[in-house]
Image 1 (cartoon, rainbow, N blue to C red):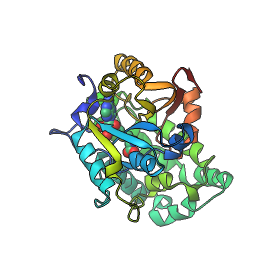
Image 2: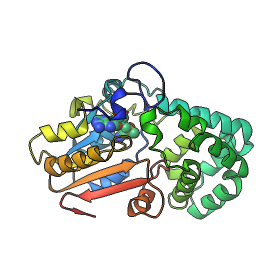
Image 3: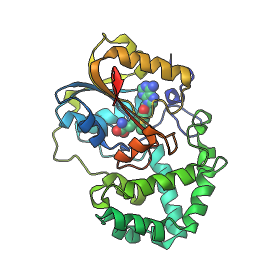
Length: 305
Ligand SMILES: C[S@@+](CC[C@H](N)C(=O)[O-])C[C@H]1O[C@@H](n2cnc3c(N)ncnc32)[C@H](O)[C@@H]1O
């Protein structure tokens, strides 16, 4: 039932072979969920991916089910929630590291030590000025254009099922998203921005107790799972990326499945990399501290907030 869904292959890059680890860490801001969701211990469903969202929700006291169609990703999330597996780089982190190395080699202000001063700022007005005058330079525009325009090196490296997902001028769009984030959220309280721009290891959960026992893991497609569980099984769901790839028919199917599996008045959160400025979902994405997202939907089953 996952035919036509590029996530089912477990690869985002056009490389041969079976499923791979795509995400070694999270790119969602879990504050979105903890603000939008009904109070813990509500029953919630998230995408497993690197396990961070599941960990954040389980730590906040939610009754968590984590699903992923990629078996490698699911095994990695399980192991990380056991607490004894360090984060490793997946395809996303390898691509981001290559982009950072190129930027640092070509643009002195993009070297890790120079970025530190920017990432330590806590006044959004000062941050925005710094971004516009020092970091968002003609050199950066040139590099991002070469990587992210439709025929750019990163866009061309994507598996065919994902090439249409990134907006046509993703270079311009992504620079606008970074500006939007730094204009709103203090950098000093934004680990998601620091990890994206400067890399480094995600903060370890070393002192936290293992969470695996408190999270149920499901291997499979999320629409299929929501169709199979009894109606009203969940109080909330959060489904980043699941519409980034499959077509309109999957979108309709997922919507119906969410409306059945989430109890009336429950919450659905959905993030997408796609989307450009001007829509309500794009405006809402500025609530996120991670600049990668183009659309953020927060819906009450039975009406939109
Ligand atoms: C960016 S991640 C979501 C991030 C995650 N919440 C975290 O904290 O890291 C995207 C994940 O969604 C999974 N996925 C995409 N579509 C899916 C679907 N229809 N059903 C189940 N998993 C899906 C992919 O395999 C991938 O691991």
